Structures are given as C-alpha cells and as structure tokens.
Image (tube, rainbow over all chains, first blue to last red; front, side):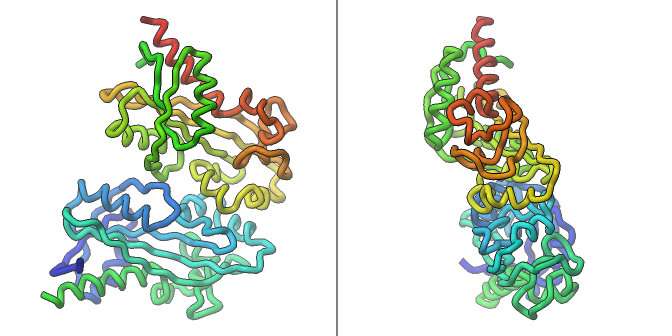
Length: 194
Length: 194
C-alpha cells in the first residue's frame, strides 16, 4: 500500500502545537493538513505501535480517511523502557525530577525518544504505522526550556545539548520530525506514481 | 440498579490467582463464580474507574452478562498518584527498587492501594463500578514476599507489616478483598429483595 494520490490529509489531535508542526513539515511535501480536534481512546500497551494502531482503528469508525494520528514516548534503556507509552502520565506525576532520581547512580544513561504515526488511507485496509526515533541519553540535570522531558533528553546529534537547550533547532533532530518526514515521503512517493 | 436474582457470575480475567481469590470470597455470599479467561483492552486514563468502565463496555459486545472485571493500582500521595493505573507497567520496569528510589528523602510516605470492580448485569444498562481502598504507607525497604508492590506497601491495619509480610492474612485487609466483598454484598442484597 502506498499513499496514492493523497494531497490532503487530516491530523486528529487535541494538541494545537503538534498540528502546526505537522502542517509546516508536510507542506514541504506538497501536503495540506486539516486539523481534526478530537479526543480518542489510547489503549495500555508496552509499545507505541500497538497504542497507535488501536486508536486509528477506533477512529476509522468515526473520522473520514485519509487521516493520521501521532503518539510519542521516552524509552530509557536502564529502566527497561520506562516511561515509554506512559510518558505523559509519568511527566505529570514524577516529572523530570523523578526521572533524574531514578537514574541516580546509573552509569548507562542511554535512551531514545520515539514518535509513531498511524495513517489510515481508506476504510478497507489496515492503518499503516511509521516510526521516527532519535537516540540519545538522559542528562545529569535539568537544562533548558521546552516541554515535557525536553530538558533532560540529549539527542546524540548535534551532541551535548538537551532538546530544551536546542530550542527551535530541536525540530531538525526530533523524533516527531523524523516520523512526519517519513509520512511526507511515503505519501508523496505514492503521488508521483500516478 | 441492584444485582437482582444473580447467584452465578462470570469473572473475566487472565489471572488464575485473582479468579481463585474471588471465588473464595464470593462463595460466602452464596455466589458461584465462573472463570472466563480472556484478554481485553485497557484504556489509558488517570483513574481506575475510567479504565474499568471502558473495558466493561467493550466486553459487553463479546461476553454474556452477568460478568465483572477487576483492576488495581498503587497511588502514592507524594508522587501525585503515581504509578496509579499503570502500576503493572511500573512494576515490570522500575520495580520496587524504583519506587523506593523515588521516595528517597520524602517525608510524606502516604499511599493507598485501590481495587475497582466493574460489573455488567445486562446489556441494556451501564456497567456499575465498586471500589475497595486500603490506606497505608510506603515502607523504607523491601520486606516480605508476595507479588508486585506487596513488599513495599504497609496497610494502616494491622500496622507495621507490609502486604508481603502479612502473607495469607493480607486478604483480610486488602483492597481487592474490600472491593469483592462490596460486590458480594451488592449482589446478594439484590437477591434478598426477590
């Protein structure tokens, strides 16, 4: 399945910032993004892929395709993937301080930020899943602004700076940027085949 | 709505130990429990009540009522309710050691273990929710056996011992026992009205 002939797609999210970011990135691929502001259930599962697929299937009964959704999480190696799919809850409860406390005295600080996009092009086929991943490490302290775990995650590239310190530059290295770029490539590749 | 005339009910769970515990407790109320070993989706939500209601509604399309499900979680005051509905994931990733690390240096060690039962008596009415809660505190170290967070949770009653140290006696004080007893009372009260 390729994203044949799609030049306009809906993004189901209640997050205005995510919508704007997606609109900017996908415009480079000649794609117009329409915002559907709507809540949907997210299932408990150990992988973001399972979570996104469940939600996309649920939405197929309620939203006209083509549409996509996006979900993201921070996976810390030494914590067996915690907080992973529950990053948002972990941020709201234990926060950056909690993660640093859990990592206290742990030498292996490897982690990755992952973004998963589930795309539904029509009602008859299973939604597709596209992944963007940014490898990095957990910083020793909270540095910089940004949102969520941005001030404690240092991506390998460009190196030495947290997402929070990178500011606008974060979008050149971010997991979400990588996933959305894949979506853009995938949909526009389909279009060229017409 | 009361549980009118119910003397036999299905328990949907993939956990054999939970089934056995429920069968023993509910037998005292003249209730026969049938085991339905089946997986079902659990939604991400900040309260166990929302999680259980979503699952019970989903199951209503697939299992003949009357049936019930049960979900439990540990809610730590100083951690804003963490790990709450995601206790199982938190146990599998950061474990008891992780919780103790998060509580390091925190004076307020208050916590409660909560069990939520969602019961569906027929297809036409909304499932009911019954709650059992055991107040307590997070111990300073891992003590005793048991499962999950049992070795770090000290219920207020009888006092000074963790769930893990209480062993079989745990069932006299446990959150699950309290929720299941409510279920038994509720269903048998309905029966007496016949």
